[in-house]
Length: 467
Image: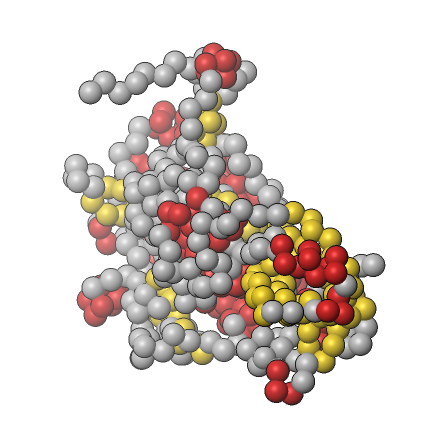
């Protein structure tokens, strides 16, 4: 008999069904044994009694929390005075006819019937496969699925292709440190894991894809920060033959439709989203990520805004120039000549646009440089010698020389958006298997040493830090 989702038993009164799941709770009341059976869809009450037969009743007395069982039983309507209004299946219960114990369980190291906030986070992360069984985190997984599915379906209707880009790529100076991967075949050379698909998505625009997106894994070897992860997920998007306004309008429409579809209990404070220049944001709010909520106590209030007109460059500690967002941006049209002539570098504005939600940047993008002379000039202002630029970005300059169209895009921090929609305190609560703030995986015990044979194959010697 085919397994039925627990949530569907309310429609099966007086029918015999097969259910499977985990024992969430067991209560022994003399001649009656009650268990709460849980699967992904919900919880139901199973009642063992004299009618169950001696063998089945004895089996029920052995059950413990988190044992995995399969039950064949009849769905019975509960008396009115026994209805449990707190659960979806509270109007019915199961009278079992047969049971199969599929797997036993050790006693879990922490309770699974709470929201889990009271439990030490490192213990939860060590046993994440158990932690994920709790209802709150199951809801987070479901929302993650629904958000990603909605994005895919929405962008498909707008003519976008979902295209995967490589994970093994080249280390280039784009801001954060790269995670590097040694090559076994070419000793002394390394791949890098992508900080973002930035270069590949621009090369896709050079290839004629015109409208691209992907749900992209990104990797940054950054210093410890509580709400930062070594690997995270972006919704990455790029479009050809567009200007800044078109990209912003598409993303704003997508965000509005997304909230209305997957979080209809949330209220968007202002539509269309207000727009603030970087200069205005810094002068008025002292941050380029202003929280514009009129009532910050309202957990279901979403205050989106756009921040625009960012400076292209900022001073380094050494007195030179570096980019504020990324080197691949296009200056605002009226600032292109300033860039080319290096005229008033501190006043050059870029086409960068950030979308901010409740005081957090959830996305950022720009219209991109698509002509080789613009990109060359950016690196020249930053003090890179031509040979270094060609070594690191020659592939981009060459692509731009073959008729790359004007293009622009954006990347959302998907984990941050999910955390805000779920009122979670940090992104670790919406990532299925997160790492600690100092980049450790407590469940898999990573990072870990590898054996000497692997090191020899890679041509690597490890030098221990000397104290």
